[in-house]
Length: 299
Image 1 (cartoon, rainbow, N blue to C red):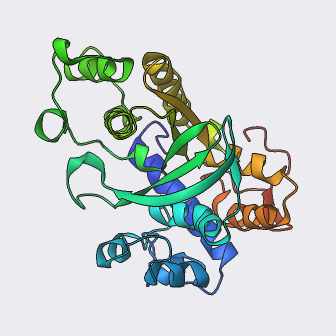
Image 2: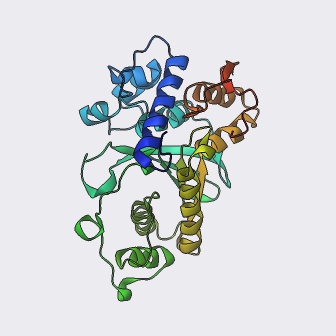
């Protein structure tokens, strides 16, 4: 019997589900037991890989991105597959409470304050009528153990240096008064403080975009992750940078209802690959490229 409260077990199951999703969407691609494709171009549509190599999406593409992007659970590949086409087409989009956004850039970053200690990630920087929107996308990174980094690599705060809700929450974490087991709150705070320093006079929002399996109700970890998001949102409310969070599935549901044929086609391609369960495969089938179930109560 699997222990579905164990992040390692749950991460392996999610990787297995994502591997099956890729196998369905692109059956010609071979994926190994660990969920890795042989070449990075097999993890992206051909035109997206070309755009990366030609630096059409930004100057950040290099051998390190190629090295870390072969996994089916790659957050970077998911980000490029979702937002890359919007850069290429110039198509506007909505996310959370924000409408009529346009992607300005994809910005590279690393977690844990160590260069390429983990897979390099991409933030999505967008602008719209409501100001600057920075999207922090993740796949299942929150199921991995977090490395302590605040005192070694981050900015150590004192009570005198706390000027807003984001910094106050960082101070609580540093002092051991607040703890997050799954949500990488330290990273989100560091990102928000950076955005605030770089854009002191512009309204800004940080959006945390996360993946869950279709059968997320089978593991308490996903509920715990969402509870931590709610707690964190309350703690940083009123700071200089607004905070929002939603799942990839919620985003794609909103896009599917826009009526824009290009966006709807893109959503269909993303769903065919990424909208998968981790465990509840009995009785499911793909209909028009999307998974359906046959009466499973859990999802």
